[in-house]
Image (cartoon, rainbow, N blue to C red; front, side, top):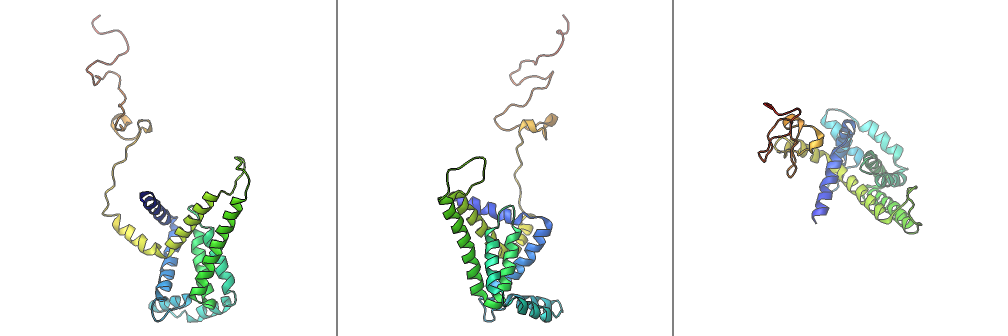
Length: 237
């Protein structure tokens, strides 16, 4: 249980650790998807573009004209957009999280023509189908060769779980980022212990790790009371 909790915390930190431009895009997409998903549990159930109209109205703008044209343009391609969004979700990894953002945008555009539930179910089905196909291909693969990349069943499942986790975090990115920013001001970080060879911190550029002995400087007294060996003959002889 502890290992799963640590892995979850690590994935949350990975989701929050993005380049600045991608963090801004993730925040905007998160707010958009969170309002869209939350609206489905109310009596209004707004569309994704309807959420943009509502946000534009709060700013004193009228975006109904261009959102209406956008919805009409993508209405016929709804199922294909949902499939493409699911494949982008499956392509998400720790080093490439932008595909999850684009996948959510495509799914929300797909919902303009198909509706909320069909669009989400189609995207999830496409994602699971791709991971399952890769897993079956890994089972029928030959022996592992070091010189070539290869599909391994365990790694395929692990990558699929990572992709699903990072995709689910997208709607929660905005509240998590706000809580992380507020909480960081009140957290106290433990001091880091640096190995002696790092040459950073401590006396003479050393930082002693518990259980290791600090280097002895020439001319100093050892911890046992013996004098350190010095260059040249003893004084007075």
